[in-house]
Image (cartoon, rainbow, N blue to C red):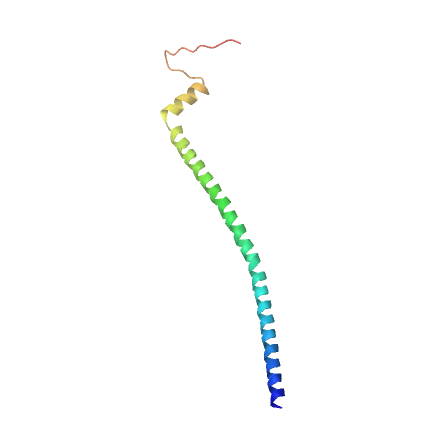
Length: 101
């Protein structure tokens, strides 16, 4: 009788161990499956951040160029260039030569 009870306990312990291992394996699969999309999302977001940082650098360079242009357009030299090229103005005493086509 003692041998039968011990055998049942041993069999019950093995069954519990197998059930526990199956539950742990299932839990690992669920955790991995749940975490994988988050890893992919993180990688996608990191690549998007890199693209946006490159765009930001490009826009900052463009902003710097526009500021330089703004400063240049407020100079006397720029006003003279516009007056000569666009409006055709000249200083007194300047001679303009035109080629006839």
